[in-house]
Amino acid sequence: MRRIVIKVGSHVLTEEGSIALDRMRALVDFIAELQKQDRQVILVSSGAVAAGYTQLQLDRSRVADKQALAAIGQPYLLKLYQSKFAHHGVLSAQLLLSADDFDSRRRTRHARNAVEKLLEHGVVPIVNENDVVATEELVFGDNDRLSAHVAWYFQADILVILSDIDGYYDKDPHRHSDAKLRKIVHGIEAEELDSECTPHGRFATGGIVTKLQAADFLMRRGGRMFLASGFDLGDVRSFLLHGEHRGGTLFVGERTVGDSEE
Ligand code: ADP
Image (cartoon, protein in one colour):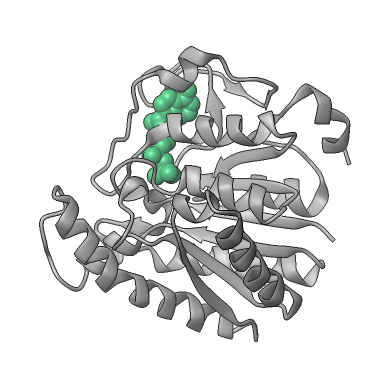
């Protein structure tokens, strides 16, 4: 059985300050479909701050206010997910983690035991950073790096990042109309990892660089990452359900290339 971590960014999950319920429903339907095909799915979801903002309009430019919004929004977000998964008779669960949890072997083992138990029972673990005690991803990252840790330490076969962009281009496609999609990436240069982050929305942090850092973390360990659009799930659906690489970018080290062509 293949284990998949799917990370969805705040741009995908929100629309003009509210939760984009139709996109959330499409994502949940897709995960339920993957489960029917015997895949185990762990979802890493952003969107708690945006969900909190729909309930109380605090100042999103301050970290403490964002933490408060995340605390308000997280249970609200989970309630939405739980009711959507319930339509498929699927249970979902909340896991609040921070990067530090993966620094400790004991804590990683505890978290892994819980995840294994949930997956064994067909439950979808929904992971987010524990923003009240750890602010790294809230400030910078939007869960991209956290999702790479989740994929690696919970032994997933692949990390899928669903973004507002449909793949990795040779330059920022929002600024250059001649940007070309890179379908397969075998390695990332140091300067690509260091370049200035270009988040372009009030709720998004990290931009493409944190996605490249996530891909680099996994590729160095023999893992794989697929970056695709979260607005239109066509490419990720073809890739995961039919093994067809139509669009999206696959990050895979040279050593593991053979495995990707299943
Ligand atoms: P999300 O909110 O989905 O996690 P972000 O908006 O934070 O995603 O990051 C994706 C954005 O990064 C794209 O919309 C794009 O404008 C920008 N970007 C900069 N350089 C590139 C590139 N080379 N390829 C793709 N996207 C890029």
